[in-house]
Length: 137
Image 1 (cartoon, rainbow, N blue to C red):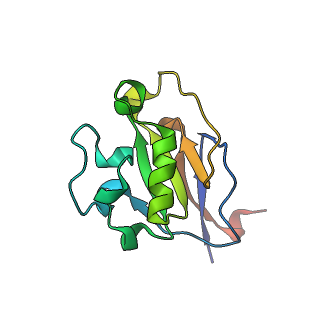
Image 2: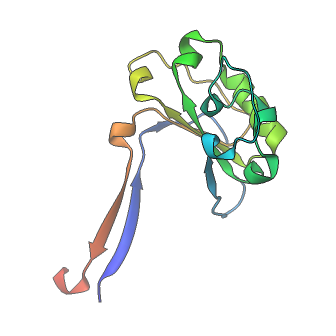
C-alpha cells in the first residue's frame, strides 16, 4: 500500500512568534474576505483597512495578504497590517511578496502577531510525494 505525503517547501523570512499550540489554522485570502468598500489607494490584499473585511470570516484564521507595489511606493505599511489583523481577531499573517516586488528591497520588521513572509514564490511550493514501501529496499 502506498502512502501519500504532502511536503511544503517554503523560502521565507520570519520575525514573529509562532501561532499558539499544535493547532492547524484555516487560511483565508484577503480578497475573499472583503465585505465593504475601503480606501481606493489600497488593494484589499494590502490588508491596510480593517473596516472592509468581514470580521467573522477572518477571525481565528491566518489572513493571506500581498506585499505589493503599495508597500514600496504607495504608503502601505506592515505596522498597519498588524493593526488590521488585530482588529479582525486573525490568528496570524501570511504575507506573500508579489513577484514584481521580489527584486526590491524588503526590510523585515518584528511583528507582534504570528506571521510569515514568503519572499520567493518561485521556490516556495507544495509537493506531494507517493511513498511505496515495496520500493524501499
